[in-house]
Amino acid sequence: MAEQGYGAGPASRSETGRRRSGDERRMADHQRAVAELAGRYAALPAEQPVRLAKRGSNLYRPRRRHRGASLEVRGLDGVLSVDPVARTAEVQGMATYETITDATLAHGMLPSVVLDCKTITLGGGVAGTGAESSSFRAGLPHDSILEMDVLTGDGRVVTATRDNEHADLFHGMAHSYGSLGYAVRLRVRLEPAKPFVRLRHVRLNSAREWVSALRRVDAERQFEGQPVDFVDGVYFDSGALYLVLATFTDAPPYVSDYTRGAVYYRSIRTRSEDYLSTRDYLWRWDTDLYWTSKLFGLENPVLRRVWPRRYRTAAVQRRLQMWFRAGGVTDRVRAALGRPVEWVLQDADLPVSTVPEFLEFFRREVGISPVWLCPMRLREPALLYPIEPRQLYVSVGFWWPVPLRRWQAADHHNRLIERKITELGGHKPLYSTAHYTEAEFWALYGGDAYRKLKAAYDSGGRLPDLYDKCVRGR
Image 1 (cartoon, rainbow, N blue to C red):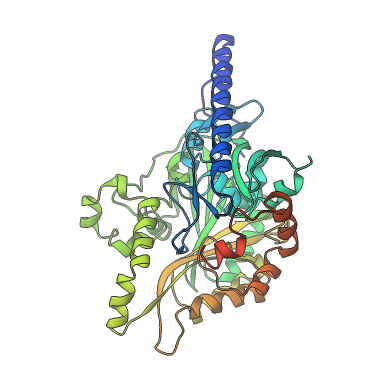
Image 2: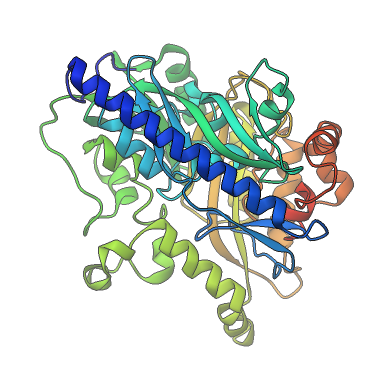
């Protein structure tokens, strides 16, 4: 990583004092908000399942109508403090990555992992996991957490760290999807940042070449003599794959903007080099939700100009997608025309050596592109997402409706993909639909560990369990 940040210079003693006073006031307000939250939780009917009442979501699995109690979350969406010397930030659980990065960039710092959509919350990122372009070296969101306060299913607020009496909960929160409790405060590790990044788009002619080049970058942390801070990539077809290598820089010759007319992912094929502000780099995928804005015609230059920029975001497009899917209008129209589709919205987290085999299977059996490729590794074990720590994986992301033949079941492609992921020793995050039997699910997602955690922190079962939430949609 770069050694210098780009925030303000050293603060005076009076400025430091004011900052500390502000931090203390925010922490006192936070503690009152947590006490109120715990009180609201305790007042909910004990016999009803509880779900957070939040304005937005970044999940892509349809949910049944909730018939239980809803826990209103208020006053827990801010940054409590940023310490550029200790390289940490104290953050409330419902603070979005956009809010957090705006606060930390002001000090020339960033969280070690920043997920791809602005409205993902830090608490949600930890509970749901996810990879981004720093994940090849920095891990998944929970790997950068030093401490968290959790409102547990049994109504307690406990502080969990790697080595205290709640270490089991600390290591079990990743991939728990709110089924054990909700993080209300997190201390997150920060890293220095610079104001801009230089992008290099390296074309490879096969998946094997792509994997070989990735291994070299991962081992050496550089490419052609230049350091590499971030890595991801795109598969366009079997003969056109790209590594996208990003490096912090202070003085770019120009800065591109993909929040207006140009579409970011298209630039990967047309430019060997590019420059973005660091903030725009973090949200490069948010404007068009990768390439899925095509579903709404937003790559059409005319429609792109008239569609308000404030609505050209991943959050808006996700809501539109889920509205169409929930209403079933698009599916019914396509089925009536004899062209039914299956929504294939998944990630496959695969050992790096298996990526060529998976992409060939995917080309043959599913046939959609582009596909996102994001190198990642766990820095330490996660009880409920048991991939090998410190080993290099690639998160393969694909999001598009796939035509169904008349003889194929409505979930044909998704089940085929799930079987292939398991065959190759990978796992899939559970932010979208899943089709496992209960036995399959618990064998893959730490069933024994989960049952112990559930007994310790939600013995009354007030929160829906992981299988109910992620497969049954409750």
